Every structure is written in structure tokens, then in C-alpha cells.
Image (cartoon, rainbow, N blue to C red):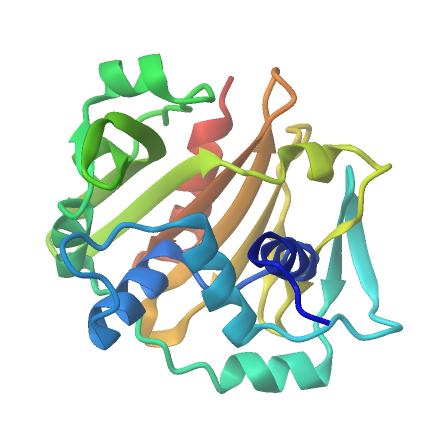
Length: 253
């Protein structure tokens, strides 16, 4: 049976949404750059993300151990087969010096303009010990038409000497699914060295991952007052507790 393009996209999306992907925006951009997929700008499309996710994900095994539950999200231990798949992933991550160039591949807007056009309330951090060097919103452009640009994400880059950290926040497109238990359950996978961070009474979940020489990363999802889920990616070469402090500084409201 031949499937139409729309049916194929729907099928791929339904398979990806039940997994925690290790593919982040900079991984996709790096892979696109390496294989010369894009021609003028390294913009990220929804279908591009789905395609890259499929390369690194396999079906959820039966009998996985559920560690905890948050709304319609289950956090469970990873199975051996999926772990082997992830360990085989050699996609390089960007170093800190590459991030300004990466952000320059997007149209950028300041915080004031971002707050006007973003489809969610942008969360701002309390004071952090490392200076904030870059703070910007980035837009996706459709076919170079500046009239149809849409908000992509808001970035904060902290840097001092050899220490650096970045925070990327965006609206999770699965917000309704993640908060509505009548929908298909969303599943996050815990790697053996992952740690769930206690966020006390905040309506959020955060997972700390050790990336070895690539530093540490916190994946955090936060429910806001508008019943939206904000997806955070927080990464740096700083100590574990300092990175956790940075993540929590966005949850002070």
C-alpha cells in the first residue's frame, strides 16, 4: 500500500513522540552542515527534526521500568538495546565557540521584540555567577520571506574565561499531549548516569546528564500558567551544582 506524504509524516511523528531524543538543535545543525543538506541557511524544519530523530530512536520495549510520572509524561529507565543504540551515536556536539556562528544562521531579535512575538512567556533567570554574554531570540524564516518569519527559541549564553553555559527555551509542540492524560503517553528515557533533579514544588521536571568531555546538560520541561510546556536545554562545562543552580534560577516566579 502506498502512503501519501502526509500519512508518512503523521506516522513518523507518532513514533517519535513517545521517546526522549538525544538529538538537539546543534546536533541537527552540525549534521546538516557536514552533509551539505542546506544551501543558504542552516534553518531547522519540523520534518528535518523528525527525520533526524528516526535515525537515533527505536521502538519502546515492553516492560520498561517507570521511574516517575509528570502529568502525561513517564520517565523510565532505558533498556539495554536502546542504550547500545545511543552509545553508538557519534554525532559531534558544537563547542562553545561555535554557538555565536550557529545563532547567526537565524534572524535574531532582542528580548523586548521576542516577548511580543513568542507564543509563550519567556522566562528570565535570577542573577548568575557567570556573566550573560549573549541573550537573543531567533526566528525561522520560510523561503526567505521575512513576512512569514516565526519564533524559534530564546537563547542565553553565559561566558567567563574558560567557563561557559547556554540556556535554550522554546514552546514544546507536544504541550497538549504532555498535559492531557487522554492522549498517547510521552516517555523520557533515563540513561544510567542520568539524575532527576528535585525542583521542590515547581510544576516542572529536570534531568541532568553527564556528557563527558562535552560537559553536562539539563533537559527541563516546565508547565506555565497558560497550560503550555516550555522545553529547556541547558548545557555547560561548569560544575553539576552550578548548572543546577542556573536551571532553577529560571523557576523563581
